[in-house]
Image 1 (cartoon, helix red, strand yellow):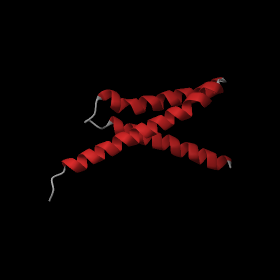
Image 2 (cartoon, helix red, strand yellow):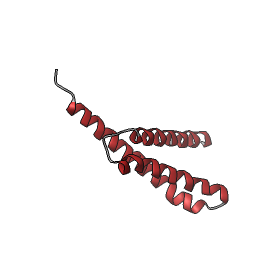
Image 3 (cartoon, one colour):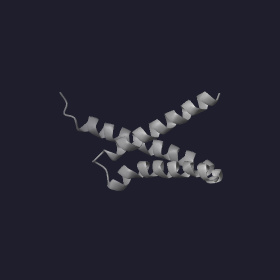
Image 4 (cartoon, helix red, strand yellow):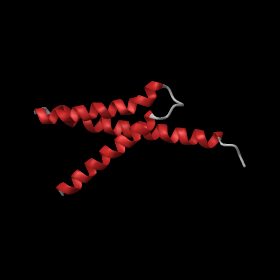
Length: 92
């Protein structure tokens, strides 16, 4: 069971990191929208590190919702960019 939880955590971490970095590379949107998912990811990571200092309450309250928000915002921006690029392609 512990291995499954660790695998899920690693998967969520990698998905959040990948999607945040992907959005940060998109140049067609304002800078604050590009870096918002990455900022949320870093805040969640910092909150998770508070567990090492014996403050798990903040980590439990903040880390997961911020990671979830980062993933959802990133996926929305990626989908919007793909839809925009599909529309701008010339018809053959």
